[in-house]
Length: 141
Image (cartoon, rainbow, N blue to C red; front, top):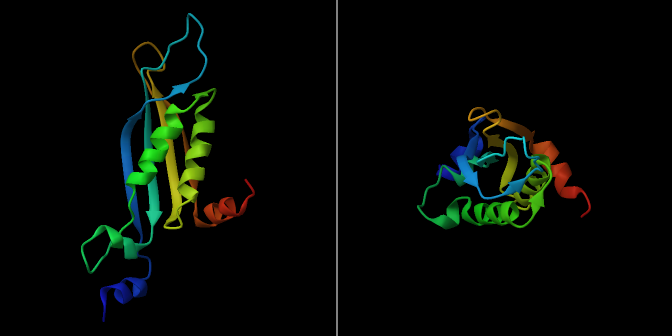
């Protein structure tokens, strides 16, 4: 039996691509003279992909999910405008992830630091499951 068929027959097999602690170059928020201005915005993304893109019989990029174009898109989205909120950037990142049929679900965490003085992280986490991502793909625009 070929490996691809074995993977399809494995009930409950899940696979993810994980990007963690990536400091992105972005401008988010509006701050007054007494406000703590973040030094960094840090992104974590977990993409659920088909196990057939991880358990591969032949070594080669043609058989796996190529995440490099998505990372370049995220970098572009982070840099291309000033955002009032973290949520808007996250929304644009979800839209970028939805462009890849290989992505079945996505969890994004975006946080800034520091929050008070020189400490703390403040962030937002969003998880979009397979059904939600499928619905998102079908929305106009």
